[in-house]
Amino acid sequence: MMENKDLKDKYKMFKNFMFNDLCISKEDIREWVRGAVKSEIKDLVNQQYQNFNLRDMIKKEILDNDIWSGEKLTNDMHNKISRMLVESLELTVKHKGKK
Image 1: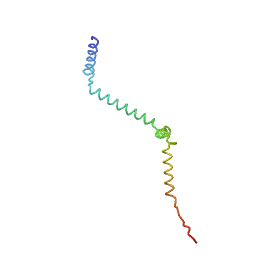
Image 2: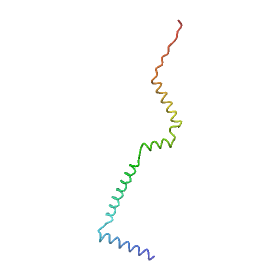
Image 3: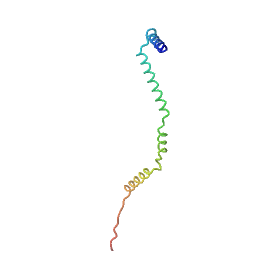
């Protein structure tokens, strides 16, 4: 029980020292922490952005999900090629009549 009181007394002495002798308020500490957090976040985002490569991410996603050999891709390609052929071909039907 005595340790808890000693700890509270030390905290109170430290708090008074910061406020009275150093003129540091709770708001000062909050502002410093906010500034440090903003700075750290900015550094982390910049660091991650440098490690980010869109081409590698897309390639990994394609390979990991086996997109190139999937049935959906094959069907989509068949349908697209079929539509392109239908749009580009012109059929002419000749009727052979009796002479």
